[in-house]
Image 1: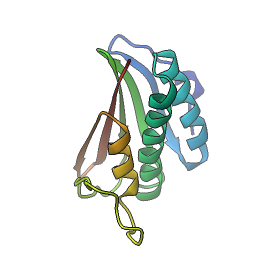
Image 2: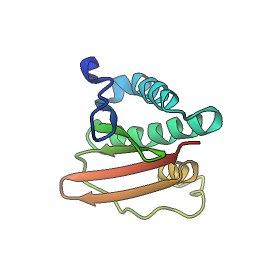
Image 3: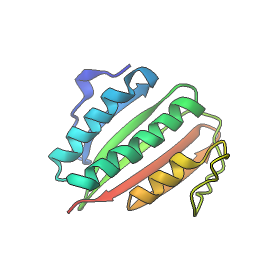
Image 4: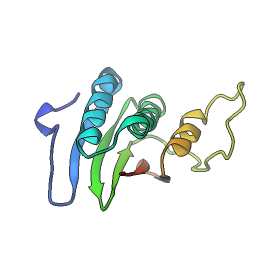
Length: 138
């Protein structure tokens, strides 16, 4: 479901990448986020952590919110911001402070994404959820 004509946007608002996604294209979405973030200067461990965090949130959208979502990756002053939105039923936006129990049925992806990024925010409502990840550039 990726529209390859929209891979690299580079608009005046700092948008670098804008993609709708489904389960079938999560691997390609990861590759696009990784290459775009690397071009913007994110490297080594920080790059891997950012890509993993984005992947966790995108997978949550696929699994819990109707099979897909929308990703917008932007460059802000000294940081990359990734907004992932979906049209699911929403969820309680409380982030666990510690790793969820092994027998827990959920929460690991949000916990991990929060741990790996510099900031994670969640907004939910009747129209779905929006998760924003921020990673400072070196």
